[in-house]
Each structure stands twice: as C-alpha cells, then as structure tokens.
Length: 134
Image (tube, rainbow, N blue to C red; front, top):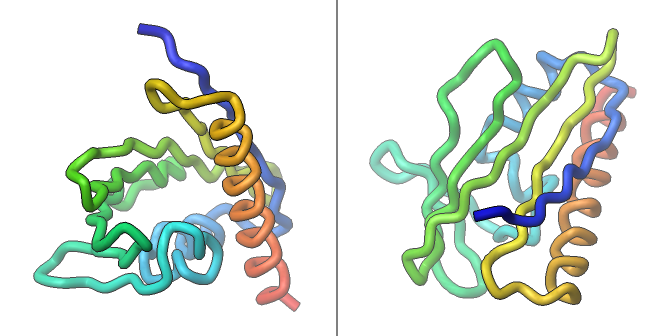
C-alpha cells in the first residue's frame, strides 16, 4: 500500500556528531520538539513522554555511526507510529531529514498541519544547536 510521504529537511551549521548526539537523547526532546510532550522520563530502562492524550512510550534506534535517529512512539491509545529521522553529514555541517508519513484517513488539512508542526520542530532544533555553538 502506497502512502504519502514528505521529506522535510533542515541544514544545521554544526558537525553531524554533535547534532546526532543531541537529537538521539530523548531527554532533549522538550527543547526542540515540545509538541510531542512537555516531560520526558526514563523509567525502568524505557523512555516515556507525557502528551496531552496521556503517557506515550518512545523507542529509539540503537546508537549508530550512520546518523539513524528513527524512533517509534507508542501512543496512549496503543497505536505505534514509526518516525524515520536522519542526521546526514554535509561537510562540516549537517542535514536533518524527517520523513513525515500521512496516516490512514488523514485529511489534506491535517497532513499540512502536521507538516507545519514538524517544520517548526526542525527549525527549533537548528536554533537550539546553532545558538549553543555561539
């Protein structure tokens, strides 16, 4: 079954290792992706985020040298959402690419809204990392 996917990217003027280390740490999510939730906690080896709908579980790809930041979000309703995310070296900088997939039954308006939210998160990630460099 084919799905709509939008590849949303941001260029960050920081080395890929630094961007990867920051984005791979779930504790940093509230700093750059506050729409996901405001509080992230490690409980018995698993990461959880408190969302407006309730507690969601986060599972991240194991640490790797390829910039793979993929993760799954198990929503309070029990649905699992797979989130493809990559940090790609671009010389001394980094391109972060988020692949946003349209959920089944999602309207164009909702897909556009989610696109805008992810773009805002990526812009926030860029701002946080580039301001930390100064």
